[in-house]
Image (cartoon, rainbow, N blue to C red; front, side):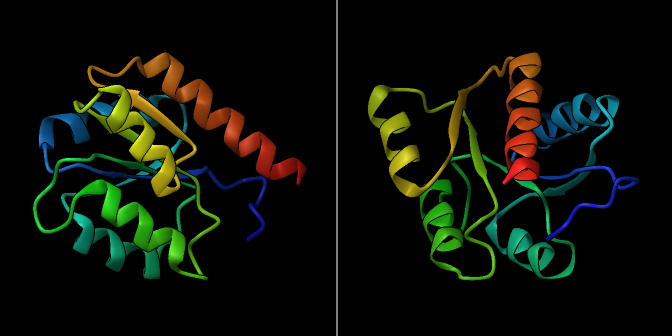
Length: 132
């Protein structure tokens, strides 16, 4: 999907912790991103069909379906598999990080998240997509 020059890049934050969603939303909006929030995977699925994001930020530990499972579902879906997924999670053992990449994520940021690094990584992903 072509991004219009005047459109802000869209990021969806999927995390059951409202404080985390609010903090990330504020940080990303300050960097000129359009941000949507979803408290769980069900909400994400409904948003995906209405307002396709450029990047998905995904927590691992959530109710209904965990982030790894949700990421695998997104990557199996023909329509959404090309949307980059970045995990932002308190689960940060090497096994967790490996599972995140195996589920299809392009990156994995442990909480508390370094917002500057996260914003830089999102910018890098958007630039790579623009070039391809």
